[in-house]
Every structure is written in C-alpha cells, then in structure tokens.
Length: 341
Image (cartoon, rainbow, N blue to C red):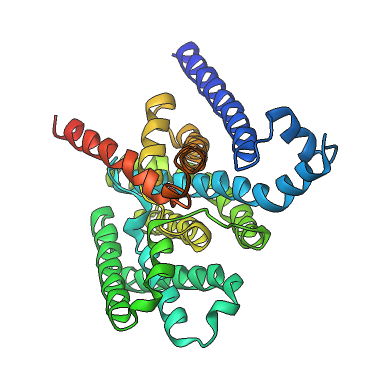
C-alpha cells in the first residue's frame, strides 16, 4: 500500500512538473505572438533585458508582458476556486460563479459607470471597483449563511440566489443606460484585451494572498469531502469548514474577475482535468487545478491572438471569454452526460 501511494505521489509530482514546463512554453509563445512576431529565443532575451533589437524589448515589456502574466495568474486563481467549490459541494459540475461574486463585481461596475461622472478618464479604477463589488457579494452571502447551519448545496444555492438578484439589478441599470453596455459587456464575457501594468498591479497582491491561502485549505477540503459524520468524528466543525472553503473560493474569484472579467468555464474544466490526472486528494488536486487552469486560459488567449492575425479585423479584439465558452460549453455537456451515466 505504501509503495502504491509513493508511486501515485511520484506520478502526481511528475504531472505537475510537466504542466509547469508546458505553462512556461505557452507563456513564451504567447508573448511572441502579435502583429510583430518575435521568436521564442528573442522573447527570452527581451525579458532578460538583452534583446536582439531594442524595439523587441519595448514591445515585450510595454505591450505584451502584462497580458501574458495576467492570463495564467487569473486562470490559476479561477481554477483553484473551482476546485474548492467542487470539493465543498462534492459536485464536479460546480464552478466559481456559483458564489455570487461575479454578479457582484458586474453590478458594482454598472453602478460606477452610470453614476460617476467622467468615468472614462479613470479606467484604472475599474478593476478596484469590480473587486469591491465582489467582496461585497461575499459579505452578503456570508451574512445570510452565518445565521443558519447550511449544508453544501444550501450554501451554494444561496450564492446562486444572490447572484440572480445582483444580475437582475445590473440589467435594470443597463436598460436605462444602454450607452454603457459595450464597456460592461467586456466584463460580463471576460477579456484580456488592452491589459497594462496597472491591471497587473491590481491582481498580483491578491494572488500572493489568496493562492497560498487556498492551498492551505487542502486538508479541510479532504475532510469535508469525506462527509459530515466522518468530519465530525475527526473533530472538525463542519459548518465553519464549509464557510472557510466558500469564502476563500469567493475571494479568489473576486480578485480574478476584478481584472479579467467573468471568464466562464475555466474554473469548471481545469479542476476536472486535474482530478483526472492526479485524483481527488486536494493536496494534489488543488495545485494541479491551478496549473491546468493557468494553461487553459493562456492557450485560449493565444487562440484569440492567432485568430486576430489570421482573420484580420473580423476576429481582432475577440474577448477570451468567448473562446472559453466556445470550447467549455461542449465539455460541460460532456460532463453532464457522464454524470447521468
């Protein structure tokens, strides 16, 4: 039994290492793609501040690196959040949007765009506004949950109800102010277009805080997945454990959505693929979900970049959320069919 466990652990670490190498390769390719192609070796040299041509260093550092850094970090945050929600509900079809955070972020953006004058001159504040709305949604769900001893499905159901109410409020504001719809739509779909260093500055502190916090919840997630009776027998306060997983997952989601918008399916597909590779043990599934989801979002954005180059103006500016939905929806239907079987 020990030998089998050791073999499984070794296989898991090897899979994570391979995924990390793949992520680095995709990252370099992603930085190099654009209207001006830069070879992988020249990308590495430009990042190291020893470019073959000075313009390559300028393009890499000023135009491409922020987007290429935001994509894997935001993808990893959504993937970890999805893995936590799926562990909490013991449901492979759950995803981060069930926390209500996404709708809270969108509503705060809508209110900001509608009621703050000359908001177009301060676009740098939009991620912070979205983050505030997401955290506000966490507080709302927490205040409802804190009064009742909820099971996992009731907890998520409350998140869905809060999400529906907040989405309805956003729709009401947009009906009366449809001139704000184009800006809000990019956040509702999810996009990495025109990301700059200020967006990265908004994201990375939250990533440094929430990603380790999420990984530290692995033991709690493993116990929660065993069921209430076993968890109580192990001395775990089940309601507090659920609330911890829910709030950390919601904070991960809020931080990512505040910069990249409501990119769908990454938090669903990434954890599912990770569990197929390393199993259900959260100590392995959580970091693998981060790596797989980071790769998926970077690949999806790489596809949008290539589409813009191949099809020109017709495909230029495609939000990455449209690509993740295009490939994620069939995968979701596949999961549903497997679950029914």
